[in-house]
Amino acid sequence: MRIRWADTPETHDYTAAKSYLNLFMAGPVAKRIVAGLKRAKVAEFKAKDIFRASALPLLPLRTRT
Picture (cartoon, rainbow, N blue to C red):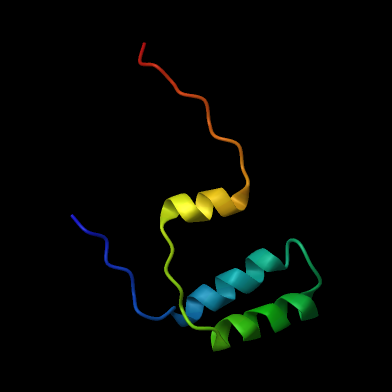
């Protein structure tokens, strides 16, 4: 089964983004960032590329017990 993403974000996605950003920064800054997101074009990346960009360590391998 192939996952089909929406071509454009929905209005509630921007509300959720602003709510999340408000956890890390002042409200006016979050509001400006979300305004920029609304103007930005949607970009697609492979999950492995997003993971690499995050610079997070790999999780250890788990073996079945």
